[in-house]
Image (cartoon, rainbow, N blue to C red; front, side, top):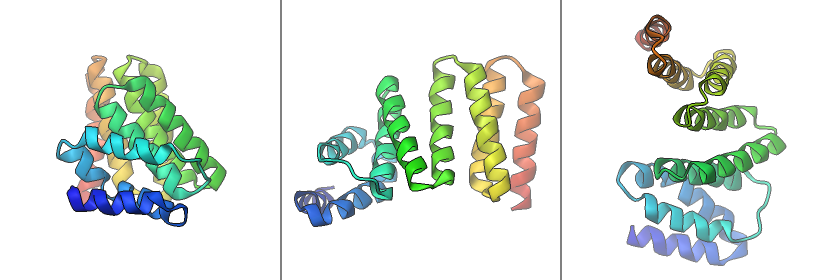
Length: 173
């Protein structure tokens, strides 16, 4: 991460390149989440979020990634706050797809907190939105999450129906 961190810090120090620092952070998000660099990722984004915000996709995406890192590390209230800020920015930017995508992550928090009805409504909304948009990848995630939600509640027939729909969709792709 050393060279990435140097480039990120250099970009972050300059107001005219700060949006590029946020973009770099977002592009590296899978690295932070998948390879155990959550603490480092949260430090990086904390440095960026200390600057005045702007209404940009980079800022909205950085808030979303920061929320995901907080959620993964069990900081659910902070994750919820960051997701809410991200959703609001996506809404202000007129990007409904990303606004709804963040709702899907909020639904994960609702599930973890035992707010199953709210989680289910959110997942259903995400699924319906992305069916219209034709985004198979997010449809699959929503179907898996709905299946898991119903499985956790002991609604095995509903869970099986969502998993079956997911399997069918995957086989079509």
